[in-house]
Length: 293
Image (cartoon, rainbow, N blue to C red; front, side, top):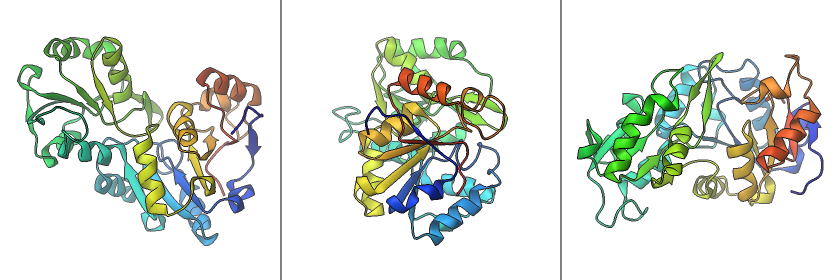
């Protein structure tokens, strides 16, 4: 994992014989948050036919059961996946054992939630009681925004109340933004980053942090050098893969599509790719236009 130029791939099948398993991002790779990409199912099937073990690792702020149900509702053949893990599942584990995960010396009981109501089930299932105001809480759980178009400024007032209370924040999705069909939605990572910059304490769960990769590698039963990570984010997918000792493929038709595929075709702008890699400080070994076999 050096500083050599990124290798541009026409298809993933060009390099997969070097690996025994893949860790796959979901948003921007397999689906856009609303619909599966037309080629995703065939790519997964061909990978399994080639004898590869497959793990899906998502920064979705929900538990694995809901991640799987979401994929199945889009027609994605989840039976082809050997492992599914999520930042939401990791968050649930931390909320279930708060002292062990450093959320307080005496644990937490009351949770103030920022995000769509159903994602607050992470707290409910961990045995915490959701409260309506930060002033009654021991911890703030941030799973994201409610509607596309929401901005950080929309949340400043409530976050200032959380800061005044000295609440630790649990971030269930380190992403800054996510694809939502043809548009974008602000993610919990953007809110948590601002909170931390203001002096608040944030506990992060999901990519690029090591525990979620360790769990996937343990369940895949493969050494890191034989596992390839596929994702569309320099900040989470590429950085997390490299920290875990994995090679990485960046999918251009995701978060950075406007920069990397400026003509709307499958031709990656190599100059833009190198510029983005330099800006983020993380250079993937490979890049591919789309998640195709």
